[in-house]
Image (cartoon, rainbow, N blue to C red):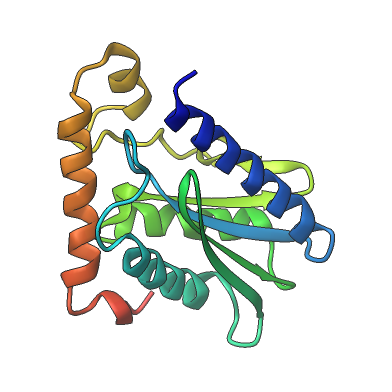
Length: 176
C-alpha cells in the first residue's frame, strides 16, 4: 500500500471515530467534506470553501438556536467539518443537504453527509439520483469505474469549483 492511501485510510478511521464520539451526545450530525480526487486531499482555498459551505448548511439545516457544536479540522483524508444540534428530522435534513450539494455553484465538490447512530443516510434512500461526474455530468461512480477521465482532469475541475466558492461574492451570504 502506498503512503498516500495509508494516510487517507487513517483519515477515514479518524472521521469514523469522531462520528462515534459526537453521536454519544447528539442524535445526528452533519459531516461536510470535499470530494478531492487523487492525492493530496488538499486544494488551495479548500478551508474557505468548507467554511462557506458550513455557513450555508448551518443556516439551512439548523434553526437559529439549534446548532450546538461546529468543529472544522484537517485529517489525512482532507478538510472536514462537523455540525451537531438537537433539532429536526434527519431525513428532512438530508434532503436539504442534497439540495445544497446540487444547488450551490460549487456543490459538485461537496460531500454533505447526515450521520445517525444507524449509519449514514444516502441520497438514493431518499429517491435522489447518484452523484454526477465533475467533468461530464454522467454518474460519477460509472466514470470512476471505467476510468473515463484522468485524475488531473478531475482535480482541475474540483479546484475550479473550490476556487468558485472562494471567489463568488455571494458565497458567504447565500439565502438558503
